[in-house]
Length: 159
Ligand SMILES: [Zn+2]
Image (cartoon, rainbow, N blue to C red; front, side):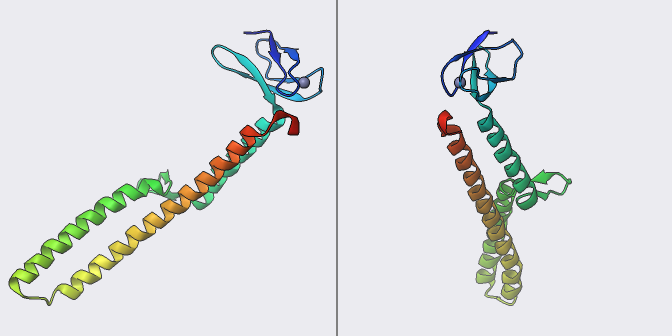
């Protein structure tokens, strides 16, 4: 691996060992993290990496606390994962409703209609709730992404 990288803040070259992770720039005294890819190595301001780790772990915590529930097998799921089955069962219920309704029209017998409506309403509420929870989760996730992007784009000299 490259023995020399440049300071992310002042641009001066910094010598690093092949497995050095943290180094302080001798020129501007900025604590740096050495980031390696398959073909290159570069540095980032260590404070930025710490901030990113903090934002990531806060998001994981928020996700677990406010946006997760257990499925029937006991696994933690986010609300978007319940959306597809909810909409799937919703479509099935609507089709069944209309099939039964058409039969009522044909037979001109409407005694069962109130019962049918009473069975459909809870399904409608369940689907509306699933959509609401998923949208709330997506809004929170995009707030997290925006926070992360802002940190990634903050210039090195303001850390
Ligand atoms: Zn420097």
